[in-house]
Image (cartoon, helix red, strand yellow):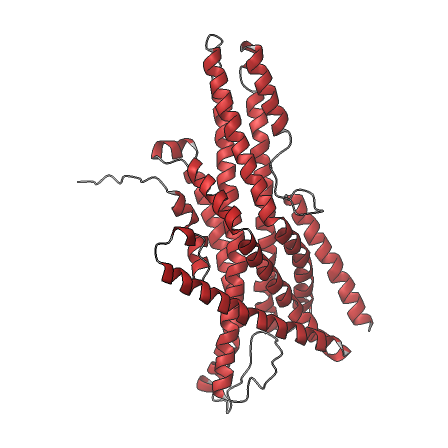
Amino acid sequence: MVKTLVQQPRSFWHLMRIPVRFYRTIGEDIYAHRSTNALHSLLLKMYLYAGFINFNWLVVGELVMFYTSLQDFDTVRVAIAVAPCIGFSLVADCKQLTMACNRQRLIKLLDELEAIHPKTLQQQQLYKLPSFERTMQRVINIFTFLCLAYTSTFSFYPAIKATVKYQLLGYDTFDRNFGFLIWFPYNATNNNWIYWLTYWEIAHGAYLAGIAFLCADLLLVVIITQLCMHFNYIATRLESYPCHPAEDAQNQNFLRSMIEYHNKCLSICENINVMYSFSLLLNFLMASMQICFIAFQVSDSTIEVILIYCIFLMTSMVQVFLVCYYGDALIAASLRVGDAAYNQNWFQCSKVYCRMLRLLIMRSQRPATIRPPTFPPISLVTFMKVISMSYQFFALLRTTYYRE
């Protein structure tokens, strides 16, 4: 007897689960306001604060290392090596600060998205939710793997390498090195206790930075995926509506509900811009510098360094492409609403209906976008500009360095 598998509807939590669960591993609980365990929430918050104090202490050490390395041309290469990590750390800090400052806005935004989320299996088929979710899941898996691979490689490669050399290859000493170039006010490699405590301090700081960096973008991906799904549904409903001339009151009620729905989605998009605008600006500026410095490291290093920094380079480029891709998808989905409205059989409807439809079309001509301050709306064109800017910085850096 063949059993029939019954497909279950996907809840809003199911779409949100990956960034929410990753955030909790560093102590950040997006849904802390719904928790019934006050002690658990307090412990998570203490863990989060302790983690960021440790992390920012390490960032200060990176900045000191960068500054001291610039004082002598012979150590400029060290400054160039530590610069991408500083950029990554500052962006992670900015994203977490954005999360903290806009917590209430984020809670309201997620509640609004949850309220309009299609609940039944039939509704989700009409919204094409399975298709949107599949694409989103692939993107999340790739970016999560790269981001965690970068932090893990930098964190654990020195210890693994030293262990293999000491235990398997018969080296006399265990090399006490760290994956990140950080200045410490004490001798961090003086003995095993100090070394391993410092090592795990650095590893936790790197993990926290990776998760803060990763989850802010994963949250953006989840939100924009759902906005694209809603815009697509509005366009499909508008385009397929029959517009019977004898049912003017019903036509107006339908169009009024679509206009309200459309305005709700646009309002959610504006809240995203309020939350993410400054962090996206810093993100793109730092990404240009990161890609430049990483490319410089890769262009003239050993195979070992090239392999490590290539993962970092791929993470930086994929992260920029990810944001630009979803910015472009949001623009395309919101513009489709106006095209779908025009493709109706509106010519057989009343003047009142046509006037309402015209207002919807006019509003849809200004697409929903994500936009940093002073930047044009983010799209795939932005990605090309960032890569172009990175190459210009890279060419200037190589010319200046080798001229010396």
